[in-house]
Image (cartoon, rainbow over all chains, first blue to last red; front, side, top):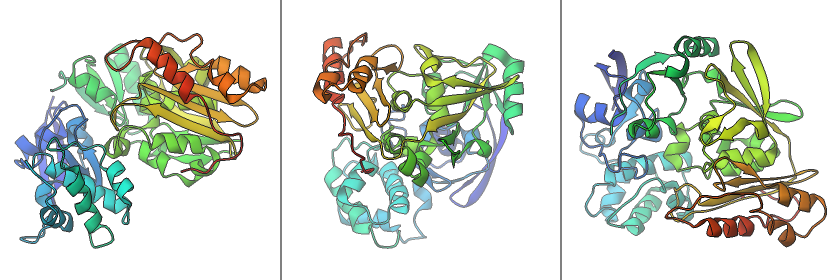
Amino acid sequence: MDISISITVNGAVHQDDVEPRTLLVHHLRDGVGLTGTNVGCDTSSCGACTVLLDGESVKSCTVLAVQADGGAVTTIEGLADGDTMHPVQAAFQEHHGLQCGYCTPGMVLAAVSLLREQPNPSEADVREGLEGNLCRCTGYHNIVKAVLAVAGGAS
Amino acid sequence: MIPSAFDYVRADSVDAAIAALVEHGDDAKLLAGGHSLLPLMKLRLATPAVLVDIGRLAELSYVRDAGDHVAIGGLTRHHDLETSGLLGAEAPLLRHAAGQVGDPQVRHRGTIGGSLAHGDPASDLPAVLLALRATLAVTGPGGVREVPVDDFFQGFLETALEPTELLTEIRIPKAAGAGWSFQKFNRRAQDWAIVGVALVRNGTTGVGLVNMGSVPLRAGGVEAALAGGASDADAAALAAEGTEPSADLNASAEFRRHLARVLSVGPSPKPQADP
């Protein structure tokens, strides 16, 4: 039986009827129509599907859409302010924190969540804080540089 | 991967959750943070007909000073454990180990009660609670009963919980000033431990083993040797006694026994700061 849910996605309220087994990532991509959130491993290992749920990073392949009912989700599409990139996005560009880009939306949102919890992380803090996100281009070094560049600034 | 279809019930109280479990019996599973259950459901290794969502029961999310012990609500997330000042003072081993579970995203959702109720011998927290000699408060239709952690894990992914019961509170005897260590060996940062050892020593000594058999295990030989005044090295040499670790692509059984012995060389008995 479908369940009626209401989720605020990037500031806009989305009301939908979903099957209880619908995963949040599929609801965001197929229901809400925001395909910036990628499905990677689909086993809560790789972090490509990371979004913010009520301000905290979660793996949206391992959250049911009904669990997010009433909550606020931020996807990669919701980070920029108009044409102005979010500081973490800008730092990824500046420091070449991406190669193929597949992990990037999840990596950026994991970094945003990390910096909210630890505004001034050490390099070790950043590496540990991003341990739930895999980059198969192995571009970790520049990703860490980008996050450290934002640390201490506005994020 | 999509779970098989199920009916969804959202419980707004502990009583409502138990009533739903009574109504649906073996067909129902409790959903807390979902980070043990949902992966199993996506692989269709678990196919419950009904999910009873207790994830919004805020009254079960707390870390409280309860006199001689610290009381932790079953729905307290790993993230809240790893940032708890009270745990840092009174049970720093648990605070530290909670920060080693999975990765930040997993710790934002996963709960201590969910991890224990899942009963996975490869999970970190069951071994930690064995070392800390915790007591678990379980609530069912007849009220609350206490289960010592040693009686809780009964088989592979099997616990002392009845189908109509809910793990509501974890009680940790205070151990401020105890020496402790939690060491796990794995190949990649976020993986489950190939083997892990949680160790406490103060007045009493507790040693819990991760992934050394089909259930989380107490290393009784190490505890007895340490209590009897054996050296750390002599005690740690007994860590694999009585265990039957599995072999898989990560490690042979003999390698696991070796790891248990190496990781059981614990801290000095003096107090240790939370790193």
